[in-house]
Image 1 (cartoon, rainbow, N blue to C red):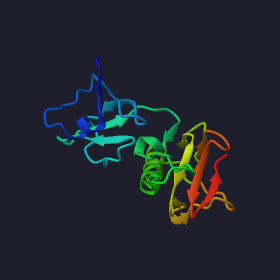
Image 2 (cartoon, rainbow, N blue to C red):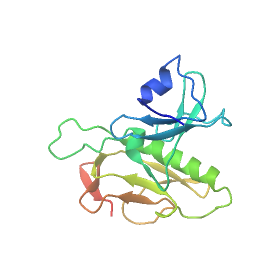
Image 3 (tube, one colour):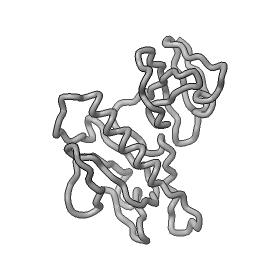
Image 4 (cartoon, helix red, strand yellow):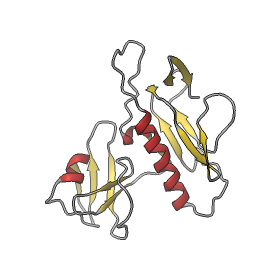
Length: 178
């Protein structure tokens, strides 16, 4: 077995790349580093950048991980610090991470209806940073619910690097993720 280092762009776009089930692939993109394995039995999963990459020839590479899904794998920057005049809006990346997480856990645990994803079994991890977001939607019990920063608890586990380390920025307000 070989471990080969690549960028996500190379794995996705290089016309000569043909993955082997015997190899591990390591992505070197900053914030998106990690090991991947070719899933020979999957021909339908969509590319989401974070946990599934579809290669030029249609092969599916799956991220090898245990536990929490990191929003930075999906391209979130967390760079909306108060002194940053041009922060990245992370809404689309975080929404992609939430949607991908919910698809992953519903397919990995099909009998886990109405189960809350816990930190020990998985969830969504936000490394330290300030995340600029607009509206985020979470599907709960086959209906759509908006993510609320105060008030009701939704069936999604969001884990941050600690109070004052991971903050959400929306409408000029800061929300702590504890």
